[in-house]
Image (tube, rainbow over the protein chains, first blue to last red):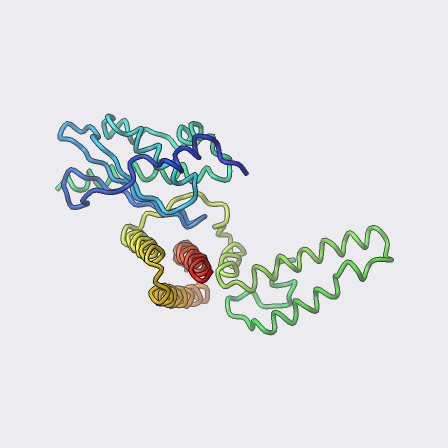
Length: 127
Length: 171
């Protein structure tokens, strides 16, 4: 099975690798894992007071498709509101990266990471 | 015929691995395609199928993880085809830390630290398998066992990565 050019590009030059201080109130952290393959993904969003995502970073231990999916998502969410970000669908990610059916779960992982991060943000700010 | 029936075993988690290996060799011989070289086309085909089934069953039964997953499947819980994600924050944080630790060990080529980590993960897997074993013996614990198996997959993957790094360090 061959990776698409876009997957290889994100894999070889991942965007926004790293992390923020998860205790900072403006930082939302989403942690998700894929039992099918044992991949682990951490997505962190820096959210401004106006609810706009100013920056995003990720750390993923997994296959090329999982790394590419999270790398792509960090690019996509920047400048979006949190509501716009949670509207990103795994099918959009899979289509952009031309993921084969056996790698669809990598895009689901990235979608769920956004949702988990936004939930973390809401939990932090509801108190 | 399911894998346990094929090996004439009670469908349970606990099994005698050396006995399993013996039964496997016996079934292998019985169904070996060479034995059917002069048999009819239909019989040969049947033997090939049976032989493949014996091999598949053995791969599943000898691995504690696959065996547990298969037992759940027999009880109607299919984990193989699920694509749902795991969201247990504390568990995933620990996974992340272990993978970061492994990266550091690989970078510093510290074989002692690597072996220590391998022991730690092996112990973790053993304890988790004991919980799986107990859960499978109790009725109505399928969902809890499924959760344990999902988590075990991360641990097995980590242990594989440790083994791969060990190989490169020893080269």
